[in-house]
Length: 303
Image (cartoon, rainbow, N blue to C red; front, side, top):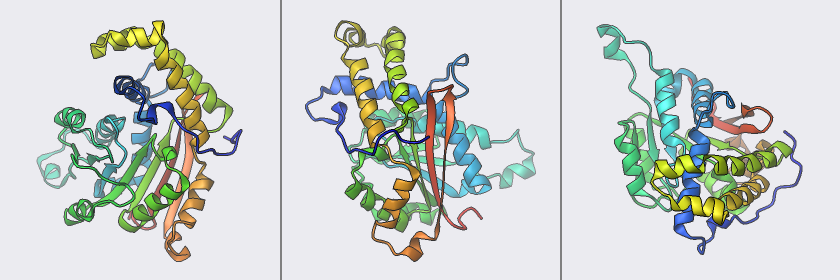
């Protein structure tokens, strides 16, 4: 969908150091719910399930050769749900004993972040043997070589995930991250729930409204009754969710802008030509809710 406005590197309230941590925690939980919730009468699928399907479709049978590393996992985000849906979708009916001996193992996912949340990640990892995490800080622009080498020693390729994250980086940092990615990995995916189109801005408004409607349910689920105070009495949560959603929309890049950053990240033109870029949108709420995706793989890596 065509952007209404040029990209702007504006600020988001929840990114500021002065923003209260307890409100940031509630916002992160709300964003995770936006990724993972599926309301049958409203949505065709959850965004997390859509991402799992896209990865399975575009990587094909070679998907078992990859380890997926989320380099901006935050409080956990959609990656645990993506892992669950992806491994469920590629699993087959119970195999015979002969088939079981050669059946590929489940795909592994790893959570990392510059500001790790090991306590939260531990809870997610305990729910799945296919999800692990790195408790120390990991800089996506300068990834520790041992993290990559560990996967290579296992015969795995590295696929980097940026879920609702890549728009946060300014152009300078984005180029550094892309260069490090292209130098050390075999693919990456950028998945956003917003863009600079009219429907992208409307989706942010719908998200704020949904947060108000669903607040009692999630306040009970989280055991956080004060969330109701910050939703209704002092509506900071829905207001910041909508405002930051609009700012995220203004910061979100088109596939052409990502290609331009790849071309100017400092690698030669010959190296850039070794990569295949695919992109698109997948609807999950009629008219306003879309997963905007970019999947980049090294040519020949799916063989």
